Length: 289
Ligand code: FAD
Image (cartoon, rainbow, N blue to C red; front, side):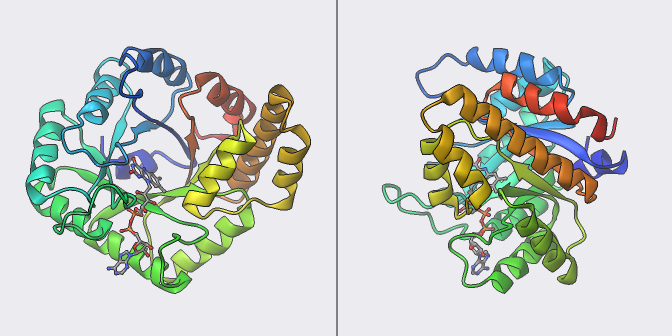
């Protein structure tokens, strides 16, 4: 099913993100994660693509095929381009076709100091244009940044490049994680002023460790509001209390986003189905079903 059709059924939609098991972990590990997640009946599950952009890495497509065929749930396969040639992307398209994957989150990917970028694709919009031309059957999603992407020249340019992604063929956006809903609302207003019409899902990550989230925000440019900072400082040495407080924080964010008419909630599950269930159980009556 195309992403457009998912939103035609009504909003807010509820989706989740997982990542492939680490290199030396058994792929079967992902089955127990998926077993736990599909019971929550997400509108789709997306699966990330290795940050190094190794074109030989087929685990994302393999997992998306399982999500669709074994777990009967719609999937989105992430795909990055900064370390790929056109031939690499052609091979990815062949793999999508062989696995009957119809939805792709087209990304630039983070630049990696150890892997010099290839020349064929500099930005996600170039990948989107290429996919649209070579594989028109694929429905394309893209990333967006409520607090602006860290490499951006300015807030305005970041929004205009987001619009470019839509003009090239992106039909749906998923946001970077954020912890202050006011940042998302201000961003959403700017996207509407810029004429971006595609639905934008809000990316929500329930925090489970102070160290982990501080590392994450330093990479992705998200900020930590005082309210969350107080929780992290107070409970950093009490993992159970930290998890309880941060789950309540994520639930509060989601409740407010849904009350404000958000298109969808995209939960960064970090492959923790028990955490996704706690969040889902608290908001399930607010989600369209
Ligand atoms: P782009 O849209 O290309 O933007 C990158 C930067 O370039 C921005 O600052 C933008 O303003 C600027 N820009 C865009 N076009 C132009 C232009 N024409 N001229 C000048 N500047 C321009 N990474 C992974 O490796 N694997 C994943 O699976 C993955 N999944 C993600 C899922 C989501 C929902 C999000 C939000 C991010 C994900 N990332 C993933 C991280 C992502 O790859 C990084 O944030 C990356 O740095 C930017 O990717 P992008 O597709 O947003 O890039």
